[in-house]
Image (cartoon, rainbow, N blue to C red; front, side):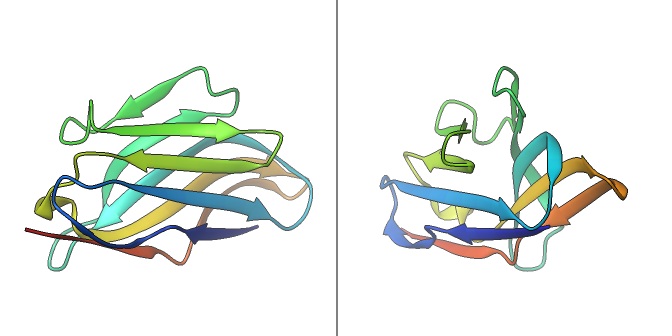
Length: 119
């Protein structure tokens, strides 16, 4: 299963960006999808997750109220709307998917998209 991310870039503090993630490759069901990020010299951390139905979301305390995770099942796309961006949000953002295929349970990661917030 491949995950293709897009939407990263350079933005000034206080600005907004929207990341997208599209899964493809085979027939599978999705349990949970999410966004993680990794800043230079730091461990990868959870940003937000969303269940397959979109009915349940989880956010890191550092982004709650500023970021919104969502899914458009018709477009088979997951989004991360990031508002009021801060320099400390600068990181590589990774899409994550936990699902099940005929081969069993699996976890997939995207290649990452860079988000840089200037002060």
